Amino acid sequence: MPTRLVVGITGATGAIYAQRLLQRARALGVQTHLVVTPAGVLNLHHELGLERREIEALADHSYSPGDIGACLASGSFDAAAMVIAPCSMKTLASVAHGFGDNLLTRAADVMLKERRRLLLMVRETPFNLAHLRNMCAISEMGGIVFPPLPAFYHRPQSIDEMVGDTVERVLQSLGMPGAAPQRWDGLRAG
Image: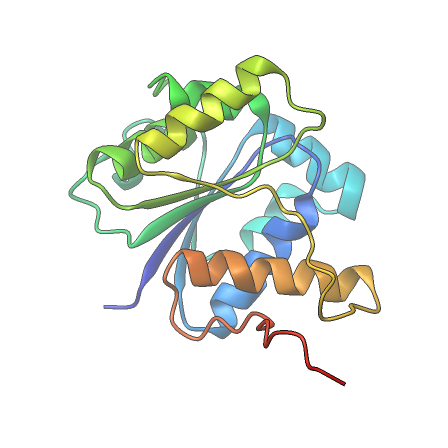
């Protein structure tokens, strides 16, 4: 059975991360299960000019957020990991407080209760106290809070390189085989 990855997309800025993550997962042979919120669809269109069907074409399976009876809503669905990319503060709060009120937040709740990897690419700045407390709650429950902050030590030459390296770091954090982020080799004396 191929490795299964659940991918959620919300309306926070950073739709490029979701697109690249789905493309890279496919290249690695990882089976993807996609849930896109209505605000996520709006943002995909605004930032990338994509329609729902175009982002769904990058996934192996896609589901409506209202389909609370889908396989992703059960711990018996054997997904290796889940990522919400990008993750809005509303979705962060819903997951942190156990509001499984749609398929996306229910699938995240399943990952936490089953002690599987859940990574949230939270997008907002600056953070207010509620944001920080919700991120702390996710961390305490075993989730990974991963704001998509680019690394500069490898001297990226484009936004594409920064996005690509961040996606590789996310895939590595999720335990996906074949992830290849840039490595820090330390400073060289010279």
